[in-house]
Amino acid sequence: MYMKKISFCGSIRYVIRDSYWNGSCWTHRDLFDLGADPTRFIHYVGGNGFYFDEVIEDRLSELGIKYTTEELEEVFFPFLAPHIRRIIRMFGSNEPEHIKKWHDLSQEELARHHEDLHPFDKRRVHFLRCGRIDMGNLDCRPFKHFNILLEKSRDERETLIEAMEARLKPREIRTYVYAAFNLQDYFRGSLMRNHPAALDPEKVEEVFLDALCRLNADPFFFRGVPDHDPKFLHPYLRRYVIYFFDYEFGRSPGWEDFIRSIFSSQEWRAYQRLRSRKTTPLPEACKLLGIDDGKLNSMSVKDVTRIYRQLAKKAHPDAGGDHETFIAITQAYESIMRYMALKGR
Image 1: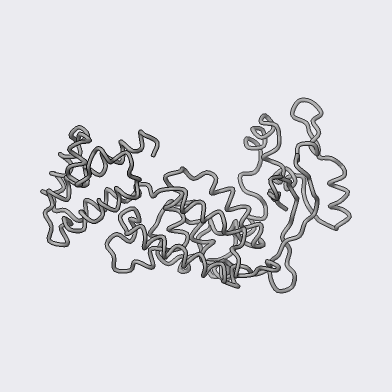
Image 2: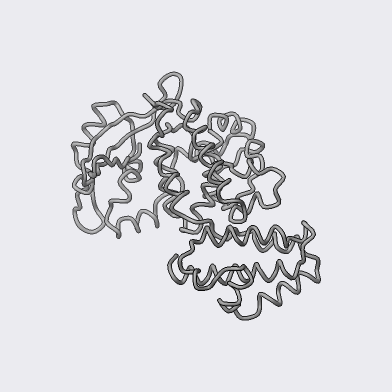
């Protein structure tokens, strides 16, 4: 069982749902409509004691749903009083029973179960767990952190993953979308494929929309989802449009390693000395990138990034450019980015 938050015409309501096998795939069904306030079904009796309204238990029994008290606590967990949540975290099981059951399977058996998982689901969970863009072949090994997706409908998987996404930092969100949709696959052979901030932003937007449309028309992804018309973007995918276009790429964790890999030891030491200096003065940074500092305030992060990318391509050591120039414009770009961040842009 799980709780689904449903937004419609400006109002919000919550529904208890469950995933079930319909004979050919996992799908979902509504069990109980909680309305706008699930807390009204929780009754406290003093101390740490509480119970759920009998109307819920009666309805679940009527439907023949088998459940435990712990499962119902998990469904209502976000709406329990803070001191109750602390007690459950302290003394409750670290892992639900429906996850523990996969631990005793061999790698081969687990791999067979993971065949039911869509690559998009694997990439999302892997990034949320490990924070990596370069994931390699996720089918070659049945990672245990994929087990949370097993025996769940598309609706329950989306509910679970969306809750995990809520813990992302703003600077991680667009990079997460880039990795989840495997956009780096569109840039094979590019040195910057795992550093999306340095790629052509218009090309990245183009391939994102292409990948989004492909996924929206993928019957494997929408297995068990009734009445999906590929002509219209499904609500499960709409949030990714917001994630992609409302956020900017942050500095990837591997940026420093990438910079180091393209320099010799002497060049790397020069770069480190430059980085150890004070921030490049803004007028000087603008001059290095050929930006009129009087017009900087009217420019967007995307505009500055486009200019930096063009200059970096020419100055890149692999393209026969001058490494000192490359270091200087990189430092200037970083200075301008810090200035724009301070201005909330």
